[in-house]
Length: 499
Ligand code: NAD
Image (tube, rainbow, N blue to C red):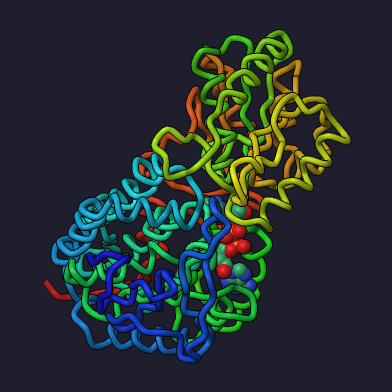
């Protein structure tokens, strides 16, 4: 991979203005938007533009979809064996690791997240997505049924064709590769529309895929915006046969409507408002620091965040006191420094939204700590992590996804009440339960309407397990064979033979 700061033919290069040029990647080449329009991408920690991005629109999506369709129909990729594809997919993972530092810096520049999270979290996990699916896909068994002695019915899996991927800004490369790797392993071609706030790493991935040996046109990136722009054009394009989307619930609804016109398959990973429940019999030495991480990692901008903390009454005061002490000690600052624990929020606009919830929290409850705009850190979007008590479950603070560093703590008296509080939400993505009573853990896990439950932990993942949400948190599942099923079509071939 070439350096983003030197003149290269890669399409990611510095200009006189010192802005990195982030183009589209179509048919194996970096290209400007057809209209030549660009927009600036801002470093959330400095408030300054760091890149000039191709402003792709419907015409660019069409170009990318045509390139992807051509690669799918005429190229070797869709017809390769799993083993042949696995070599290339694993090589992409290897090259991500080789370029880990550069990619981590690009991710931190785009998102404002601490470099340690980019390096040890996002970029490492992106490589793992490729390594995992390169291996796992070969275990994806086809089915055979035998209705009688001289009949066989075989369900084979074939590529979908051109897959549209639309991704958010909070874990840019991590979530994009979670879709790209299985889509590639199943022989598809891809058109990716990354979030407009974070186009950098998905674009850099273009040259990595090329170096790894992926045929031109199999991986395409169109940068640009969502509604009425490139994102929506992708959801309406007739050559695009499926949409895998991660983002806000309201966007998922809009995409579902738009995709209906061409009857695309859809898979949605949407918003969350995770319950984190601590019972009095929990190991608090684990539960409390994990609750802090669950609420504030990535500046609280994680769909799986434990963003509502419910604590059993006998330990409530003790937990609030310890949480506040730990939260006050979180080091907020320059995300490129290795000891920074919390960086900047993605945009000034998003910070305003988070601050509007802080106003609600202060009016309806009690601010225990934080909730300040940290202007002394410069013009970046820095907020001190906030803890609130005294809020009611029906408050907008608890019902809506804030997606920022603001945690409410609520006491409860009984197991039934804890389940009812956890379920009093339009979302159902994930929840954590902290207890040493296995029977209670079982009852509460079964009682909570969510796609993923953690017991005495948070964020633990095995990539073979289904990932996704219930209620307003999603539609369908990704992970392991669930991803491979989504990124393939089942075809039944029935044989009759003599013998
Ligand atoms: P968003 O919905 O605003 O944008 C996501 C992507 O959709 C972007 O690429 C955007 O350009 C595109 N888009 C927007 N409108 C579109 C439209 N009408 N048609 C097609 N594309 C469109 O979400 P965001 O603000 O980038 O991300 C934050 C949200 O993502 C939060 O709600 C968070 O919970 C959710 N999220 C969910 C998961 C999960 O796995 N469930 C993971 C991460 C983030």
